[in-house]
Length: 266
Image 1 (cartoon, rainbow, N blue to C red):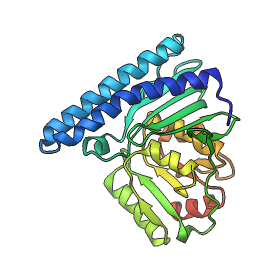
Image 2 (cartoon, rainbow, N blue to C red; image 1 turned 135 degrees about the vertical axis):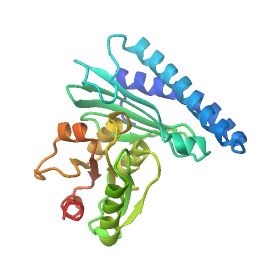
Image 3 (tube, one colour; image 1 turned 90 degrees about the horizontal axis):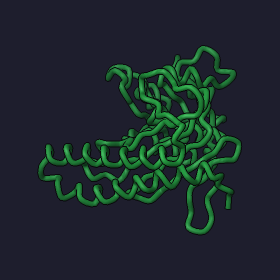
């Protein structure tokens, strides 16, 4: 069983406490499906409650750490990057594929991250230099990205984020023509966790918010994957600052990296 540092233990505990609130609300959301408006309002209120709990717990643990805000300048020093709900539409429709995502970041470097789906009780965590893991009852499972080498036999997740519809359709068409299978599961945070676990061979996020992928980036990297900007000019190395600035993320196993980049940018 991997050793969880005190700081990572606190992060996991805060995420799980917020998850208890979402679990309770998710169990109620199916009862509201007959009222679309009621379901949407209920889901938004559920996220507000979960975010309040998450912020309170993290602030108690590390009162000096500020919280990053999507679209604003990165805070100085160690800080939190959180999303109390990545996959709101799924949640509101009773689909159990959404996540709480929380990371500790310093100078644009993710130091630890947690992605948790309270509906299925799947928790993924990583600390820089220590590997990525899925929580288990007795033993935690070490995560490894897939080893698949054939793009035409690959399963990819594409999350449109805030991309223009035409751009999303163009990218999806290019991937489908390459022979791979493409899915849009509705939560970039969970997609990245599944990528780290080797369930997706590659994960793409277009014009996505930092809060939705920061923790997942660390999971993939610690599981042996590569993180690149979709349209980077230099494919020889990773450039996380470029990814964080654009929100265009490609998380992929090393075997498929060059092939996938060429399909997307031909």
